[in-house]
Image (cartoon, rainbow, N blue to C red; front, side, top):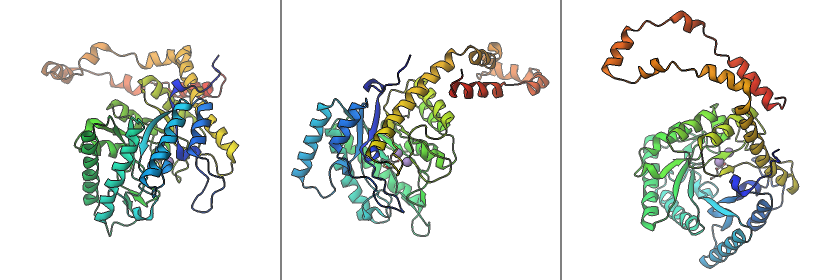
Length: 387
Ligand code: GLT
Ligand code: MN
Ligand code: MN
């Protein structure tokens, strides 16, 4: 019997900004006291997490002197090693400082675009020094409220030029870092460029080294756009582009809620976990979420435990799905391929002639029942715990 206890081998990670979230929103101030990065490392380690992620300024204040920076980093690295925690993903905060109000890579101001490169190089150095595998770019302010002032075609070119600069910087430094791009349709900007996983995948192919670049899809972000997250992730997996993932919970079409993983849309979360486990995705299971604003510090740790526990429960449900004879029986019928016909669907001149002449039984196809109602009900019952 599974006890659903998280262990480092499950590769659960949290951003410092997630469990460190103090509950401030556009309408209300902080509701929780700060928790230091070292306290976070210690506590997450005791809960069975594998590692942490951070933005440059989650750890090092933007105005820290070089010697302050070095001592903060040294102390943090010591904590990681003392508590057997890994530093997995690094990123740059390109959204908080007021100078980024018109974006970073896509700001209309050339000095902001140049400063963005400087800030990213420093943050990449930090991530590489601490052993990160992946570097995330979330362009929260890369967008507009009005298209009157910025040319979206020009903005995409600036974005590409900036990322290409950093691709070459990483190569020149010899860092073993991969880049992962995180799309979001809106918030905090009215509209954000490259709003979905699909648009990000297309953009990646235009970069100087597409092989070094993949995506970091987030449940909430695709759901905000009304899209099926499992399908978005499937496309990334199918192209070998799922470099990292942001797991959380979200009601469709709302603001970016970043709820505990599985807090909403349990069936969507189930199919996601099932796909991640079956696809052989070996990357971290990162929770980019935070506790409800109603919570005190204890509630924050309940939130963190809940994310990991729900993942493990859904993973066990995916195993049960495979062991359930009735479910598997239906799937076998659905997947009963006509192998002779299948062989005819790869192109050759002969197959084209054969297919052109083949007489299909269209009425049989029209009348075929796919049994999805039964299958979905069985899946629902499995998730509800009665199978
Ligand atoms: C911010 C955002 C997230 C991104 C983080 C990485 S920062 O919390 O809401 O979706 O993943 O920059
Ligand atoms: Mn995210
Ligand atoms: Mn989010």
